[in-house]
Image (cartoon, rainbow, N blue to C red):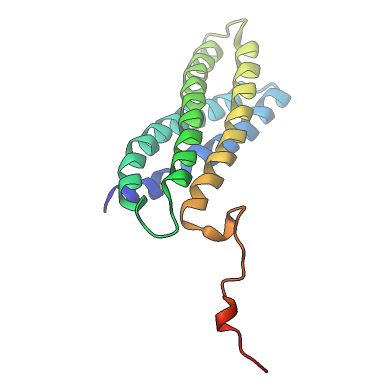
Length: 161
């Protein structure tokens, strides 16, 4: 396995984990259930760890694909910029989640405030995750790019009737 393969293995979890964790946290807030909130906090911490792994393996993956045809350094740079923003948000969310776990265990009066803060950060993370996932997909999946023509045949290849 190489860095590109490792990156593909770990890069989906920060996005999927944040989406799932956001739904679980919203449910826990609605039901006023600390156990459900704690599940989301653990998911957010794991997502932050996987974000760090994705950032670590992303550099090696970039080196492997940046000179391939139809890739371009601009597309990779866009993805890298979005990934850095997402990672930063997920690191903050991970820390807030650890604080949320602690305040829930201690039945602290600020536990509810922490859960709303985590939910706001998580929603931002979901938005950035969508942007990051799309820009990453555009690296090798030219069909999802905004500038994709879809008509890969040139006029020279047309058959005359």
